[in-house]
Length: 325
Image 1 (cartoon, one colour):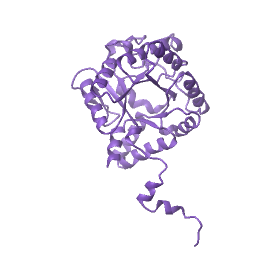
Image 2 (cartoon, rainbow, N blue to C red; image 1 turned 135 degrees about the vertical axis):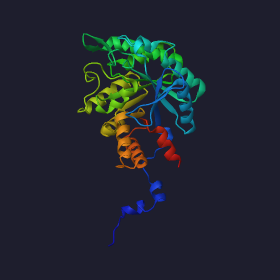
Image 3 (cartoon, one colour; image 1 turned 135 degrees about the horizontal axis):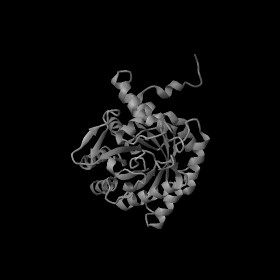
């Protein structure tokens, strides 16, 4: 058979396939989410996330140093707030000596070149487990944004490189950008969770921080999984209000949204490979139904191919090691 084009020529061996690969993964693509707890010498594995731990600050610093040695350039911090400090105002979130603020300072002191991003939302600090202040059974927007602003400024003062508002309140990016500018933190970036969906894939994360909502759900502020155009609208507003990086969360079930966002902005696009997506791969691998190494790399590659230049993933260290081999 005589053919003018034989597509398989470009797949003939590993060297050729590498030469013509359209998408590549490196450790530079990864952001490692880090869970931090009070105490010393604490390392608690999260049952629904095998291999992922909630650590005290001393252990966290060692973990961040390990990340640096693997070529990972950024961490995204989450803290577990003591129940006694939780209320409906979130005031512990802007305590200058709070666990988040201590963590930022310690990590920047120990590994100054690490890009430190911080979660900005009230759910870890809320007695109701919601991302905002609750009044008469509803999550109020504007008062929540005021609290998020105070939280963000405290993170900036502690030395955060980026704040990462994950709350999905209206107008918060503009408010945070203005506050940073007015308080001489113009160097601090904003990675906005622009398209954060009300997803069932967050379950293991809520186990990690004991932050499940105490009543109802989060559908009045997180996005409807049925909607695509709404994600573009949310992202464009965040871009106009001063976001530096825009995010889609979750990632694997929303690859189409990542692509839509990529095609409608010139800003860097990130995606969050969330806890449920992590747990599914780990569970299937444990059962022998998937090859874990191949599943991890293929999943991360698909997220990058869809258009995410940055990927927050619990597989960051594991994948970085695989890519070194």
